[in-house]
Image (cartoon, rainbow, N blue to C red):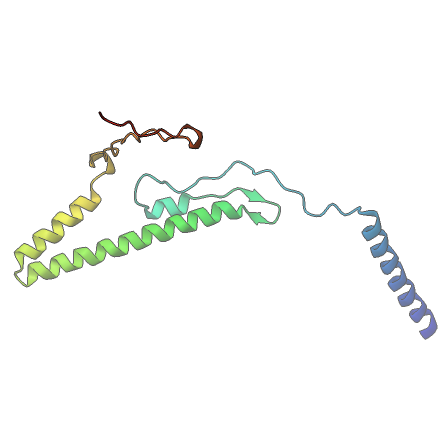
Length: 152
């Protein structure tokens, strides 16, 4: 009985090795093939600050092994930016409240104006004028060297 079990184990090991070598030599394993997205992605909005409902509505295209990595990375980067922005805004608002409580009205007004300027749409910013084009003097080719003209 022990010899029969040993024979079966050896036969399975040999068959596995032969199969592995055959697949490697024939190149019959195509590997992972790209999968087309399923088209159900709902990205985060890029034109306004994020809200709780934006995060809950976000969907990514599913592929064979999970979600599209580029879509997830983009959403995480956008969420991190928005969280950082809101953290800075909270800090400015807290400084403004502290200035008001301490009676520093001028400081509070300066903080309020800076906050309102930062929240203003970028379309209100006037366009930056292009620098003027300064014409260059024509260069003299090496073979066309001009000789100075003598005055009489």
